[in-house]
Length: 181
Ligand code: XMP
Ligand code: MG
Image 1 (tube, rainbow, N blue to C red):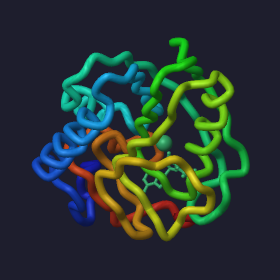
Image 2 (image 1 turned 135 degrees about the vertical axis):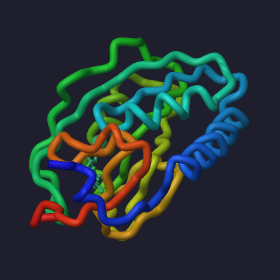
Image 3 (image 1 turned 180 degrees about the vertical axis):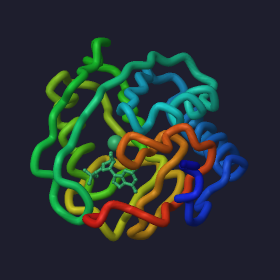
C-alpha cells in the first residue's frame, strides 16, 4: 500500500517551509543576541522543524528535548498530559525557547511551560511551526509562529497521523483522517 495515496493537499511545500524557517530564525537571532538561549524541542512532532530552525539561528545556544504525550484529541480538551521525557539542562536564569510543532488548544504546551517555570528560567517563550488560533483555549507565551492554519489536520515535516508521515518533506492534509479530528 502506497502511504502517499492518502495525501489530499500540500499545505506548505519544502521550499516554503525552508524560506519561512530561515525568516523566523533570523527574527529569533535578533531578539536573543546577548542572551543565554536554551532551545527546548518538544518531541516527537517538532524534531524536524527544530533541526532546521536551530541552524537558522546564528547564535550560541544550548539545545535540549522534552517529550509530552497528550490523550484526548481533536476538538476535545486534552484529558491527560504526561511528561515522558524531561529536560536535562539547567534552565535556571536562562532564556528558554520552547520549539513546538503545533499549538492547537494550547493545553499541551501550557503544561510544559508551567513545568519549566518551576525551574525559574529568566524568560520563556514559544516558537511554533503551526498555530490554530481558532482552536486555542489557554493562553501560552507564543512569540513566533511560522504559519497560522485553520481547523485542518496537518501531517509531514515531523507531524504524524498514527505515528506515520513524519518523514514527508512537505506539510500536507490527508484524505482519510481520524473521525474525532
Ligand atoms: P494542544 O491541543 O494541546 O495539542 O495544543 C497539541 C498537540 O495535538 C496534536 N495535534 C496535531 N498533530 N497535526 C498533527 O499531527 C495536527 O493538525 C494537530 N493538531 C493537534 C499535536 O501532537 C500537538 O502537539
Ligand atoms: Mg506535539
